[in-house]
Image 1 (cartoon, chains in turn yellow, green):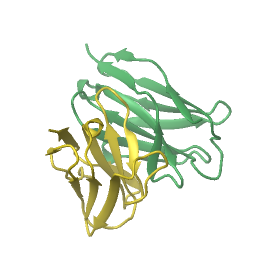
Image 2: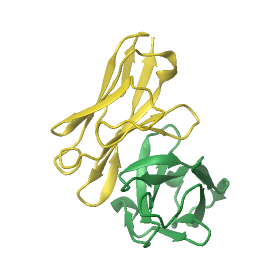
Image 3: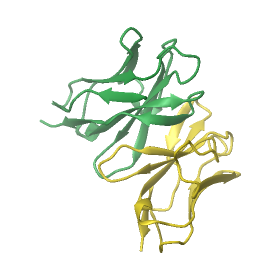
Image 4: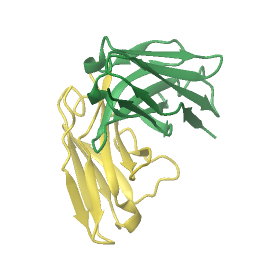
Length: 110
Length: 122
């Protein structure tokens, strides 16, 4: 199972919106609505930000939103803030009853 | 509140095995939801890699293909502890290993342990 493809880095100024893409195949992202997104600050464990493509866990800011079209899922961060600077990973359930993570995206707030 | 507490750092020689534990608190291993425990690893400076998942109610497992034959995931419902054992260790297995609860019906990882650093070095 190959890793899902994410851009290595995305940047934006405070207050702007950015979108991170996550491209998979018809056996993972394209087949199931089980895409989740995780935020990871340096030296910390990942934190769930979005699950089932577009659902936000309680406590996660509504500035984070998720969507999916075909084999590509996306995470949008609106009103970018300094605290959003972190690594972001997508994850999808796959047809072999396994899971696959994305390659990861480093978000920089300019 | 839900907490996952993992065992401490390990240093192993190539060819050895390591067993990492993950003790859960704040929920039931045998509840009708949230009954999966995933294991994820992260090599130094690298991304997240899914290793496998164990059903904490019935014990069924699913492993990533690249770990088949080398990894064993188990659980002890009496102590709400999950275990991951990795054998035939090589230097490339040096990583932080995380346990993470499968939320809802298991398809997302809603609570994570603090991570266990496993170093493989001769």
